[in-house]
Amino acid sequence: MAPQQITEEVVYLCTGNPLPKDIEHISYWLLNESFSFSFQKISDIKARKGLALVDIVREVTMHPTIAKWVTRQAYIVQRVWVSLEN
Image 1 (spheres, rainbow, N blue to C red):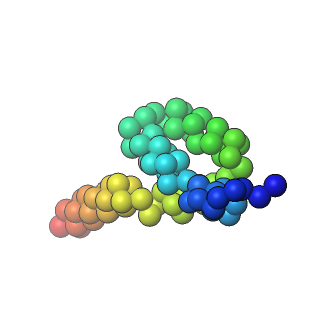
Image 2 (image 1 turned 90 degrees about the horizontal axis):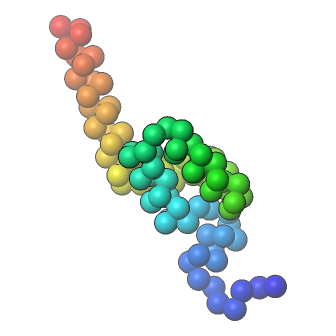
């Protein structure tokens, strides 16, 4: 049966993409919780909502908080590398 209204949530669910609120939760867990907790919660969301890990990773890496963190880590690695070369 088709939904009565086409909403943002319905579009995400029909296309199999993770909802923005799910990406917010996942990003928070990855940055603030233990690996085992994050792994379990992400596995639960994948199973419950039928999401593919590749879709989650794609969306999480574009999340502003994660992108900023990755950029910062890359900068730190670059600075360490330069200091080791000198």
